[in-house]
Length: 291
Image (cartoon, rainbow, N blue to C red; front, side):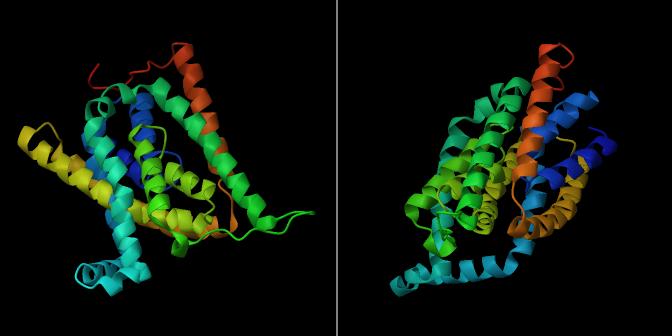
């Protein structure tokens, strides 16, 4: 991997990680359209550490409170009623599905799941799901002529059942094209949570999964080699800087805007990929180093 490739891929990772459009799909597509080798699951996992550090810094006050309260709840049963302590436990609960499926489907994630036809399909399908979830949220918020506006749930209403559903939604992002934030936010909206609550929990829930995945991948990469460390480090730093700016923008955006621009983008991109593959212009395994 060249330094230029790593710079571009770092920018793509930072720009797309927190938007509901799938960063793994865009990294894969950037390589395919540019004629580069697929950066691979290892590169993606390591550079995601950069974007998750951006989450840690942006939500540092929330995370600090949650960790402090959760730590005290380990020895003090009364503290388990504290909202921050509960959030700590619910992040753990929500992380179980992706941990189990990530280990179980490791070979598929690094192989068949990277087929561009599957990526395109997931972009379209999950785009439609996000659109339906967004419309449901908008209807509840605005009400109508014969219906009063409906109060949506906040993170204070989060429970174990909802935490697990959020977790299962996040686990779907193991397939490129789904989008970690897109799937988790869609699950939250469909369960009746506000856009801001769904997005905030989505970001917090991603921290253990992404950091663990990155750490294990980093360990394997050190032992097995095959990673261009300089370019990968550059991409990680770039993804951190760009990712932080995107989080700040996105959290403000969703307070007044809908997710429909992302929905139309996902569907359009998915259709373009399917057409290009069908016409033979783009190989479904283009840029894949395994082929």
